[in-house]
Length: 82
Image (tube, rainbow, N blue to C red; front, side, top):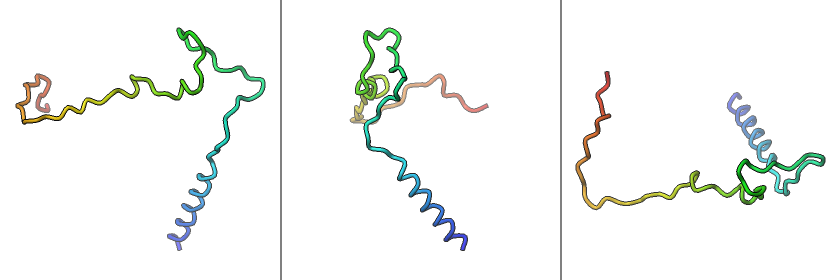
């Protein structure tokens, strides 16, 4: 009995959460001012520019594979626990 009620509760939660998304274009509320220009920016950024991640937030990966095993360099901070 408890399992059936938990299953029903989970199904209701999934159904409620699936109805939260909206596919229409966002528009500002009437009477409100648009977002201000960022400090130091020459112009106000467009929404597309704000959605594009910066280089700092998505750096390029260095996937240099090692061809042979190498001995590790001595690490002065690799201390045993006290």
